[in-house]
Amino acid sequence: MAETITSFAALLWPLLVVAALLVFGKPLMAVVRSAEHREWTLEVGGQKLNMMQLSDQQNRSIADLQTQISALHQRIAELDPGAVDVQTSEPDVIWGQQVARGRDVDSIPPAVLWVDDHPSNNALIAEQLQRNGVRVDVALSTAEGLAKLGTRRYGAVLSDMGRAEDGAPVSDAGVRLLKAVRETHPAIPYLIYCGPQAATTYREAATAAGADVITASPGVLTDRLHSLGLL
Image 1 (tube, rainbow, N blue to C red):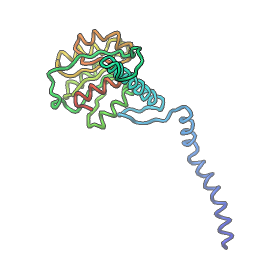
Image 2 (cartoon, rainbow, N blue to C red):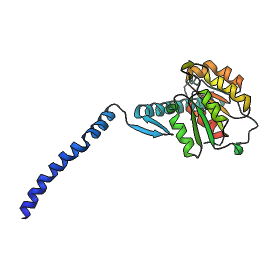
Image 3 (cartoon, rainbow, N blue to C red):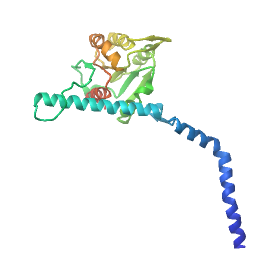
């Protein structure tokens, strides 16, 4: 009897494996294929990202951190040449900022409005904000952003620079939104987070229109959000 049970058990395991493959075969193969192409999907900061997108943002943050450290070392070397051994080449930092004055950080609401037609590009920073108890409302266009701005108070408005508006590309959409925001909300912190070329091209126009910062640097953006009490 014991031998019969043992034999039956030995046959049962292969049958269970075959049954599992028949039931779960397609989902398992889909997972394997997605892994091969780095298509794992994660939800970060309210946005669904594949592994490639997440890796790109992480690499950008790491590269920016290295740039900021280089700039700090350069500054230390200028103040005290013997304090640190650094290279003499200038770091490639391309951002400008306008210092915000007269704002009470304690009165800033724990919510931000982020206007960007590709919100997945901002997922990691959005996740940091949400973990800090800050609500992140996303708008995909200037019109949607202005509509949301009229319905609640925000601690800051964040925007990209170029985006599609009504199906057409608008290279200075961030500046146009800024001008509209300043008409009704002259004191709200307005931060532009965009690519390096856009930051260079529209820096003067953005600061003249009242932007608190225009930057391609995740580090600079998070530092400003920290100074506002949002991070």
